[in-house]
Image (tube, rainbow over all chains, first blue to last red; front, top):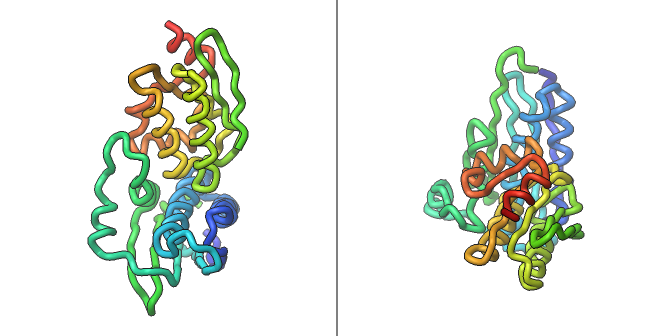
Length: 141
Length: 112
């Protein structure tokens, strides 16, 4: 697979999330990851960016969300970074649990984990960083 | 967001005319579905054939619509594209909703 990295930045408004979703999807199909894998990566990235806007920034526009897409030899690594409030460890742990059958919220992390091989939340230099990794099978791209 | 509506007997087929049912469009979609229920429609076929992308907010809005007709009627889905279907499967919502390929089959199931 071709390697490289690009960082996309949007303002913290839900109206803009589709821009990174569509861009990430297109990058992934351009390196022949296939529609399904590209769609899964897009879905995970959209959830992480939505979380940054809705939770870290409490839906306040005027803040930055950075999405760094790194194509590596054996994986796609996406980092979604914001400068909003930190996510308490217990909140992150609780979000891993499957929501109730008819819950209207709480499926974001389920989607991220289902679409990616690894999902990590870290706090780095005062920023929230969600790292999403999709491993690429040898010969798949 | 525009939601096309077509009545077939006592069933209404609601089709969101939007490619992305996401955090941006979900509130409007939810409101449109609530209006439909308020107008007395309890048997609803949600035709998702134009929807190419759904996120957790979009799924939540569809669940909300189901809950609004629960007890009085039903809401079933049709025309789900593969990428959208995979989100239903991932979140196990494919076990919650009855799904059909064609709108006519979905209408027949609700009308009977």
